[in-house]
Image 1 (tube, one colour):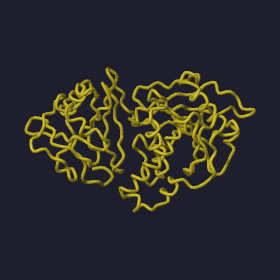
Image 2: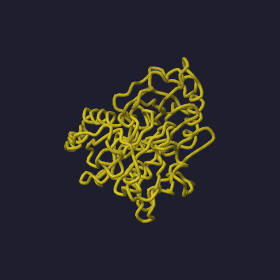
Image 3: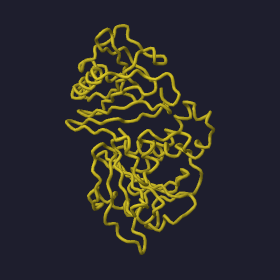
Image 4: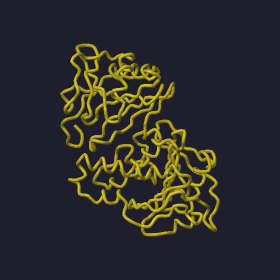
Length: 352
């Protein structure tokens, strides 16, 4: 029992995990009418699901069967339920609800699998455990947020940030990161303090799309009380508002929001602040077991978008920059006061 919860998912044994991973991998390499399958497998009995879609005849847990079924269940939030029927694992149907700590395997693409579980505190939040890509296995380090000056967004992504600690603001950034990565065009999002305009010292004037300061839809939604935030329509409205902001990051230049979610500008071109030193090195970390802490030239992280984001954070040390690459990498740039250097947190393993 964790956090006082009682309706927790059953823990799969090693044999079940191995079987689900094996089938998921081979299914990922197949095609159905030219499309690679994208499916989510959840280990739970139908009794632990709310209003499940149950098959009259259960389906074998086999690559061919999953590939044929994939087009019907590829939308986000739909899981195929897997459970034992005697000694054999079978697919009993589909569900949109799963219990806390439920084992989930998501088939993201050919040879790309993500092991995750549903967070125990937030029904809509999943915590990634491992990413398997071809012959590479990346296990998420649960102590990856233990180093000094860890951004709050990284703590929440790792699943160890309690709601009462002020995670609301972090969750918005997480959703923005996921949405930025999803549009696939790459982009940069700058988060700046609401009570200062010094960030403009690192922007080339005039800003292509500077906005009149008004409360955004995200601001309005975050003012709702906890009861309203528990409603499905509130979550749908927030996702729509987040997608609207993240869509702006696809425009050339950076999008700027305040730490209170006010949308300030997009299409902004970054520059080194007058009198500021050129950023020469950044520390690169990844919350993966066995990952090595590296000190590199920022040009090694990617193109001009990464370099300008690192320079911006060095010049504006109370700001954070989120950068999505077209190759699906995602980096959070934040200043580390304890080491007096920019940290580049590679977090794509947490966003899949």
